[in-house]
Image (cartoon, rainbow, N blue to C red; front, side, top):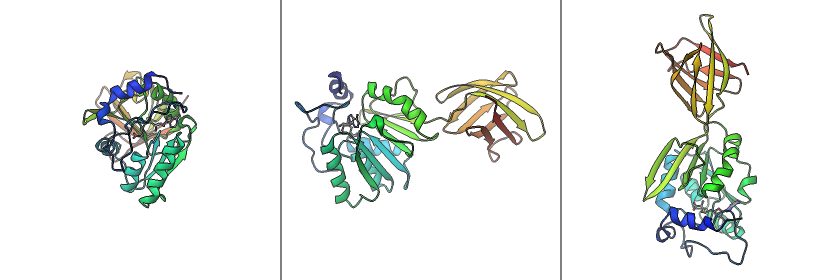
Length: 272
Ligand SMILES: C[S@@+](CC[C@H](N)C(=O)[O-])C[C@H]1O[C@@H](n2cnc3c(N)ncnc32)[C@H](O)[C@@H]1O
């Protein structure tokens, strides 16, 4: 259930006068729908303005055919915009009237083959098939969602959020659009742990990585690595000798990217 502060926070995140009425759909009534005395939900309904929707899809680099999932989809404007751009989309919305309105709009636009809406609690929603997840929720809800996002989503999945961060997870990108903050995160692979690197010349090296979300530090043959980055599955780091390692992190191995790696061919396997 929504705590009283929720509405105030969303109101503070956007000027209330700017929060409604700018979408591509028919007028939707007041920016904030008061449900009293009906049950309230974890987050009140406040729509994202159309230019911010467009910027979120652009920030997520949503491509035709990809699947966007909007957790708390309101009137469906983010999934509908994704569908108009040739992507597939699913809106997850707990309010039956909003979910029905969004589904009707999809039918009216002939998008119901690629854009659908489910009446569901976002915390129980299965999201592992998403390429992009959209959020316009509240800080406390984003925090509660973090573990689900990090464990259920595949490495490389993009998360875009209007207005609010996800706990202390540093975003990969941040933009301001019409005075609104939008954030992008790319779900990292699990790279932390001990790896054995086997090189083409038969030599072996131990790679020890510490990981906090997409931030990675560590050592190779007990020497600190530098310039380490982890974007989805793609891991890059340099050695003190200036050698570049670049590879794709899988569950049990890291496979070098031969075309871009200056290092001789190598492959790593997980030891722990
Ligand atoms: C701030 S609105 C965002 C609507 C839409 N995503 C947008 O950006 O225009 C949040 C939405 O989440 C829905 N919601 C709140 N709690 C939910 C829950 N537990 N599961 C699914 N939807 C929820 C609300 O009904 C509301 O429509």
